[in-house]
Length: 307
Image (cartoon, rainbow, N blue to C red; front, side, top):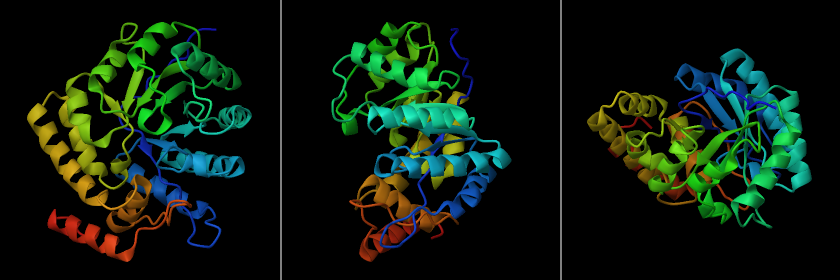
């Protein structure tokens, strides 16, 4: 089977899963069409569903399918690239999610590794991803490299160099790491064969200078215009402007993420900075206390944001 083509480049925004503020923390899919339109109106052309920021591993398989279907319906109007994260579950469920996503015509799949019996080397990771790729052979597949969370520390440059044509649907990785030396090796692996999406919000300007041209950063949800200016400057080779925009974005992220986990703080910031209320996170994560939200609001005001 020939390798699947994959031409999408630029931003894919990891969307936050809307959850109702009730005792069961049930899904709130009613928000999704408005959420998709808000992102599209601000120039966002791709979305990632059920990722880390989307609390994918905290959702049931049925819930993940429901969210996927809601976004698949929404992007029919907005024409956004739809990437679905299918990993972070037992293998039979991962394969089921991959088949389901392909059946409704999503644009690409992203897959975490097995999170308990973790792959120890490239060979084991290839074997795992081969099974996922076979479940959805017509949909481009990317691997989600996030060693800080997964403890899978396989070198991505070496992994991609070793891959060859073993997985026909495999097209690239989401690289959530600050190791730009490794990221650069991944970019150039097998004659620049694969797309590399950076997953670290605060080093994108540096990554652009090293040849990474795409990213999946949560902060684009709240700062889409600023993020677009950063990407455009980097692609145009305007290093000074890219650095300036990166500094602006990083300062805002530092204010947001100072008091809580990533998802907890990003959900609170989403409500402050955008017209979209995605509700609370799912336990064991908790809504930010009012004191922390007030401090975030004050910090953002000091940076010039209207909150």
